Amino acid sequence: MERIKCTISYDGTNFSGYQMQQKDRTVQFEIERALRKIHKDDIRTHASGRTDARVHAYGQVFHFDSPLAIPALGWVAALNSALPEDIAVRRVEKVHSHFHARYDVVSKEYRYKVLLNGRDNVFARNYMYRYPYRIDVSTMEAAAKHFLGTHDFTSFCSAKSDKENKVRTIHEIEIQQNGDELLFRFVGNGFLYNMVRIMVGTLLDVGQGRRAPADIPAILEKRDRRYASKTAPGHGLYLWQVNYNN
Image (tube, rainbow, N blue to C red):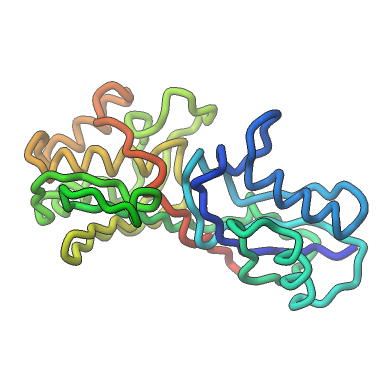
């Protein structure tokens, strides 16, 4: 048996999330269906983590074990030929049998894309959150600094989260504006359910003047989801990269 590590991209528009569900279409279902075509048998996969409905990925990672002796480039071709067009295998590596796509993660990078133009853009509607309000980026940057470091992010995760430990470390936050497009970039050791989207929603409120940068430490201290802003929509979010030691 060989352990195969895959890095994939997917357009989340027509998926109900990554993780397998009974009735709805998911990324994991399509991957395991493709592997079943190749192996003529069920193959279990393990991903770096879940993404929600309509959330995209540029660099999601999963692994599986296979009895087939196929070279790495052969796996790329075989999987891409069996997968639907909204999933693409970018890279395949053969790894040590102890490697685990979820438990060996060192950090993740998420990006969130916002369109500030008030006019409808039919080409961006599935890939950017349209937010037609004036914002102050420098004020948002001041607020974002309060997220850096290690904190209990209970206030910034969904009440549906099943994680008992809600302490996470954020290494980097970057906010870039290019014309009408706004990009949030987050790098951390891990992220809770809806955490990035709630942080984005709160930062957008700061940018609009509905909150102050100094509100962020108080919201963190409350450890209560009700004190943060609304959750930004899923279609603006991208799991950009998953980092490992090796």
